[in-house]
Length: 249
Ligand code: SF4
Image (cartoon, rainbow, N blue to C red; front, side, top):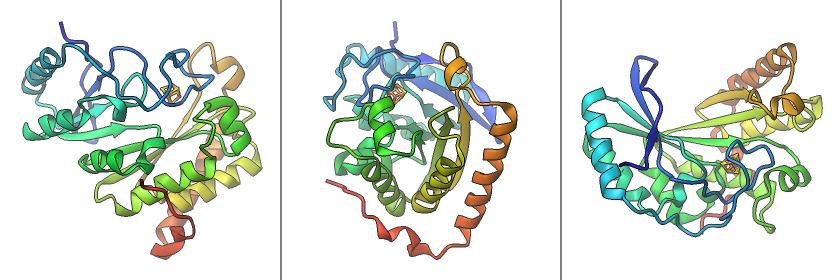
């Protein structure tokens, strides 16, 4: 039996999307307090070793054929870039004529080896949540020596050299990034990273929605402000984000 798990295929902008989780259990380099998957028992950058990959690949091949998917969205239980076979998997999907979208929390985009893997994809979706270094460490719990500025700079540097579509997903969290000063900071982040597309989410799942969910009205207000920042970013000179350099290593 395959350890990949799937969502029901769906249509997005006329494309048939097959969404897959390629990790059998949570494996992430962050340990967010609001993670729907629970605590990160194996936090770190060690590759996620998996058994049964060949069977999972065979099942995926059948699904690609039966669904006629245009795009496979790799959206995993943790950081998909840490899957030990991620390079092979992307190559395999593309060899079937199917595009790949990869969700990453963005941390590893500063490392050359992972940058090269992400570069193979047609679409990369990075994530952004809190806007101060203090809260970054308090609620997302990245490695100790990793700062929020480096996180943002790494995504910006990745996007500068990426030939595909870089999408940025911002999740609004009550008390962490929904006040005016934080929204201003999010606008700056958009100017620095310069994503091709912006997705604005809010915490809407129990049990976290009670503490971190924001009102419909505030959500709409912030969406308008950030969408405006996206429109402004289109008119900025191309080198506006060169003031911070990423750390591809
Ligand atoms: S980055 Fe995502 S998967 Fe990793 S701990 Fe945070 S919420 Fe969970």
